[in-house]
Length: 493
Image 1 (cartoon, rainbow, N blue to C red):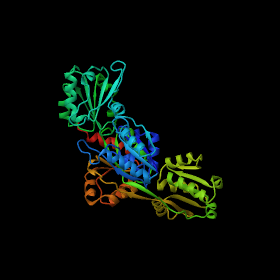
Image 2 (cartoon, rainbow, N blue to C red):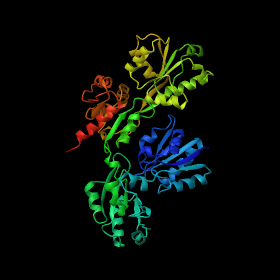
Image 3 (tube, one colour):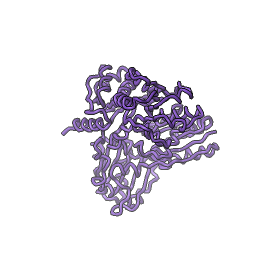
Image 4 (tube, rainbow, N blue to C red):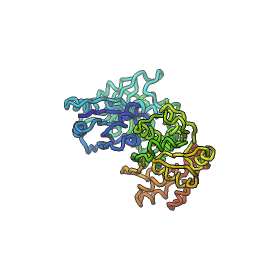
């Protein structure tokens, strides 16, 4: 019998998942997840992890709660670790308590990893603090999703409260909420804000008061999922609205994946307020090493193309009953920042550092260290094959792939929803076009397409894509500048 972890995914932004929650996701055998879970979190799972979607929509619950609980019980019977991933916090109107009770009765061990509730974190992203010494010394979180025909709320008591009122899952009941608060004495000018998709790049906020908010919501088209906040703290939004002022806010970017693992470029876009989707996912498969213990000892320089290459190489050393001391006379070169960081995690400072995976930079490095008798490039099947083809005339240069990467599709995939498609390498072009349908390839041609540099541009053209803009220099920083410039050019003046 396995264990179940009830994990809070936070208000929306994938980066708000806790460190402990992320570690559990990466080890999970099964993930049972909701509609509001950010897809980027699911990409952190291991390749063998099973996904089970149990999402609910307003007025439409295709999988009843009691069936969800039985899914957890059933999966825990045959898997070591089952994760129940829920938006917000499991115990804040997330029915986590009910799931915990069912697991307890079934004799299944479980653990709760709290998440940042949208009632606090979501409002913070809209520039609204739930408490403030000048406006509210308390806050109250209330469900706006009531059982049909029942209203157990004491509206007279709620109207008397001087603190902030936060209603979750209450958009369909907004007229009743406003009417009941007004009827029970809350002032008509009391501030109200509605925050849709809180903490995500598509966040939308509408403000008004108890008398005007319904009309403003109707005019804006805002709908579920959304928070409703009532109180004087709403007046602080113009001063504290940091998120919606970010330069890439409301910019939805598709960043085709070149390889597995984290993307520094994606993190930079998110840090500027953009919403990034990385697609397709990449499955990593191990490849058997080709060098024996004796052959490895004769290599003068080892060049590593990725973090994964470093991790797998040290596993290879252990299999040969060797450790890093056996490489004391071998020149170690890290290609790329994440590769260098992977060495640091092992307590090793590489002898050389090539700042990015560029054929020109690798060749320049090899020329500088031409006294090395033999060079071995370690990376993926694709990386080593590309380097081998381009540097075929370089003597004493060998390749040893330790893993392969394969694009994995995840449907549904809505290409229409993206404003910009940013290609950061030739491989990212190949990976995306390998998984797109003919219809999706036609849609791609209508999008704003950005290229990081001339090699990527040449690959785009080889696929018949000629309408794109190329960054001034082949660097992530230059591509970020192009993304911002493109957004500004597309904003009506």
